[in-house]
Length: 111
Image (cartoon, rainbow, N blue to C red; front, side):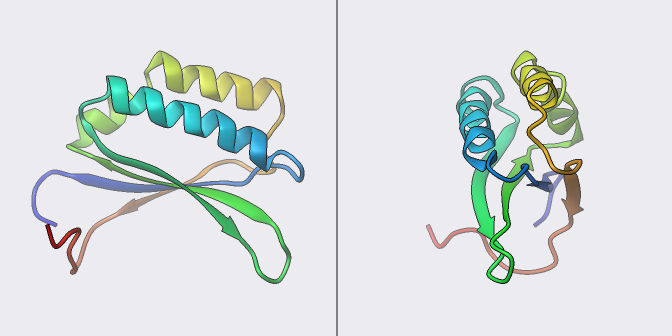
């Protein structure tokens, strides 16, 4: 991918029994991001289930127009409120894992 776009993958590991609550909170955040963050080009939530252990992670695939849009994202009131709730309700089994990606090859759409 050419340009200044920034691709990010966030891996969220909820505590056992808390996946649905965290998914609910993140789903709400996706709506706020879509409405209020024009520099966020993609914000898509996925559920990953480990076939051996049954453990569930949530994976957010994100794309930002540039570094500034990404930095602004974590400063929004909606994001800050999410962090507050995740902390207060002790919903996560481990800290977020954030991966910054650089595209090598491929395509996003045939449209």
